Image 1: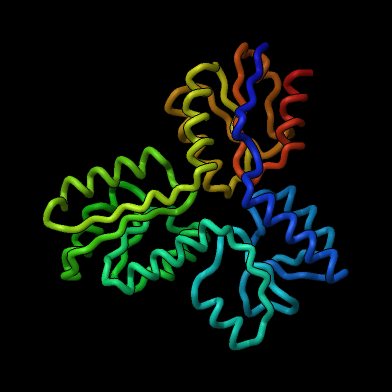
Image 2: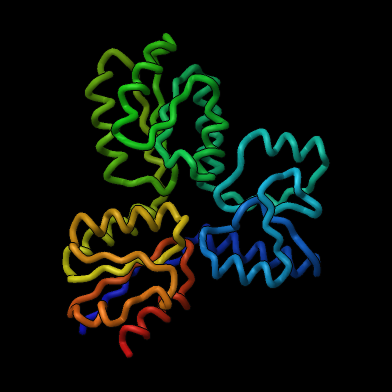
Length: 284
């Protein structure tokens, strides 16, 4: 049996930073620290942090302690609410996400209409869209393009910014951007910001390559993880047998052992020990 683990599997730099800073805050307080939403989309990591004093809240109105802002970021109005209520925030939003917040806000002030590509119910997308202003449209798939263009043309603006969630599908971004450009150019000025995280791009490209070489792809990551779901979708294009698991307990080893060449890729919120557990379970 040949097992290949993707080189870009597991924690990205932003997730590592977020977890380390959270643990620092827990050590400093020696008590409870609130976190607005799950810190990262990995149940095992969140459970471990909760055992050390992290308290996950769903709304800023529930805050009783200092509040950690997770890597995905938050909506603009939450910052304003925290300021009014004098709630201390520990902002651990990924720097790449913060940069997108500033970009869309600046372009909006310069009278650009904004197309934001992203998963509509994802916390990062919700946060970013709140900085886009009124002249904006959120697109999740190619099916949204016609209505988005209609909204843009109705605004009377001539300048358009196209930007995306950091974990959006690389191939879908290129495809949607090409369709929009073909429809609108040269009558409109289109500025394209390829804001997909480099770590996300590398992980998707490696998954595409690896999945074309193996009989079975195992994708490891949280069920709510956007970047992990993208890896699953990418793998399915090249490999007939793809499974998405969170831990080794989700593996059907009787099924797995029927394959000779197996590829493993893990999302950005998956710790190394979970990847190792899966590898060792198959190897044994």
